[in-house]
Length: 114
Length: 110
Image (cartoon, rainbow over all chains, first blue to last red; front, side):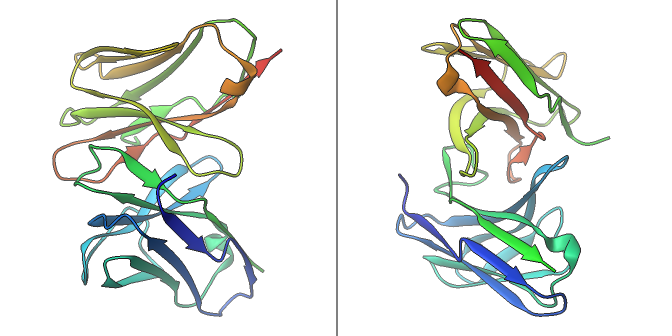
């Protein structure tokens, strides 16, 4: 298995609180991605990074911010969590852009906002 | 219209059946076409990928791409209960991250 660790794996939080999800890789891959997966919507890209301090928005970036201060870590922050952000969040990594070689996904973080 | 359309199913077949999974897309710039498999409560994993049009075979799995029709397929021969999973098509053009279909949930019944 590719070395991707997401933390936490499960989290329940209250509406309005900030939440940070962490993705850690040991593969030294340049590209990292955050997706959310919801019934009826499939996987949707939130943000991605193409290097340290280099990030870009995806399809559903509103309400989310990201940071990448080291190659191995990509953080996703919900500044003020809302119930619509209840979802399963997946981190992915790839060696090349735009993921036309194999992309590896983490195990997911199940976030519930109550 | 979403860029990639995929019937979410669910699809239930008996063991040994041939399974056909399909996606259509609207962006003619897509060049790489992939199929990911996702088991329950796991992350997706790459099953196969194809560049441009044509067929690609890997064991019991065959991926087909018809760019003229903007249609891709995944065939599973001699399906097994272990093939029960959600199958997601994905595609990409030169400089964009992957765009996924919604996924089709497949159950193979022993």
